[in-house]
Image 1 (cartoon, rainbow, N blue to C red):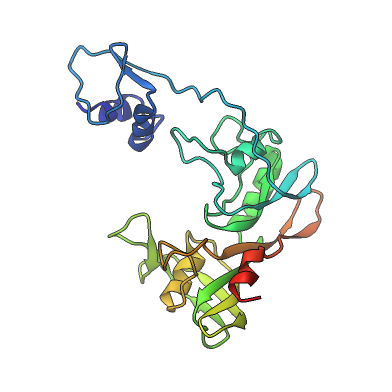
Image 2: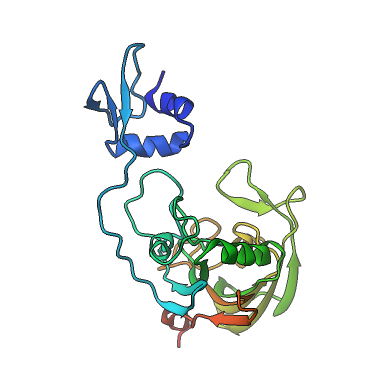
Length: 274
């Protein structure tokens, strides 16, 4: 049996892809020797041992804090930072690492404090929970669509009309399982867009999702032939993906309805020629 298949079958707490990362990181030994090949074939009497302890390194990521109290922390996530690890070995710091020193929620998982996520390439407002009770309150608002989010994006061209609501169901793309597309078998998805400013080639838009489907804004804008600039999955590469979570309206545990905002990154207006 292949080494990665053996590990996934007899140690199901991690997926096969996660075990492949452990193997490549030198965390798996066969008969006392490190094996770094996923397709290594085991003999019947081979003894497999694994070391899944995290690397001994200081987690010292610092992120811009917008708001913090005893129950929540709100940050302005920089572009390029992961919300949380997806399992297995990860050699970079994440938002979850930053939350970990401030929360008791999910501390024994790879996503402490996390109640929602932003894609690596998206910047902006992200809220974390400091305890289980707060996590339940926030997660319920996201699932019941009571948390109101708005984004700014730069898209190719100038959408017409300048204000519209897109009601386009989204499904996983069977040819590319990591991608999504508009399709009749998909889940309902609604996005409102508003053009704020245009040049002859690009437009700055406000995007307001009423639902929270994976890649929703990116898929919707690509479908109407105005993909987000820098979206390497649904458009073309640029210096970054120009998608920014600009505001989040949500109720925090003291009963206050709060609006948290993250200013538009300077590269957005630079891109627009200002």
